[in-house]
Image (cartoon, rainbow, N blue to C red; front, top):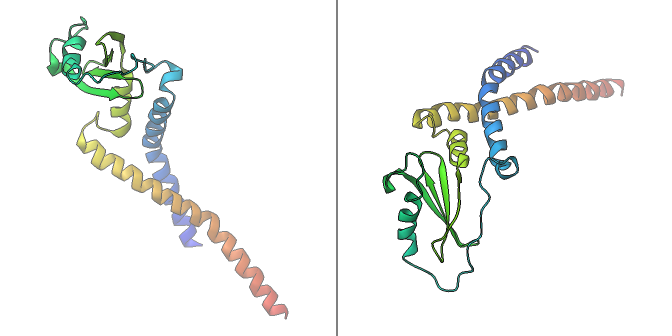
Length: 176
């Protein structure tokens, strides 16, 4: 019985302390899943159907995106990431200031200019927003603690069942 009591204490206190991190990861994960329905992310537009691949437009997409007059976007140095979406034939240029530009990969036409909160949410969720110290210390501890909480929960649930079953079996064996 002593083992179950100490397991309950470990389970309770580690669960209470780490629930802050579990909730943070759960909330940011849910926001990532429901970004488009909640209006957090810009829906992917569709470019012209690709007839011939314009190999050089990806270089021009940097110039096109930076020339849109976005605040705090002065050069290609402000670009965080460029993504090519073959299914829509679109370049998505994401900037450090949480702005995004979608460009038709065939024509170079700007399809959309909107805030890009998805990159911010992703960096919050994976911990890179806070730096590597957070990712490799806090998230590691959180993940390992979730494993510990799972096993201690299984133990607290399963061990009493096992003990009762063994007691019933022993009682039956004594009757015979």
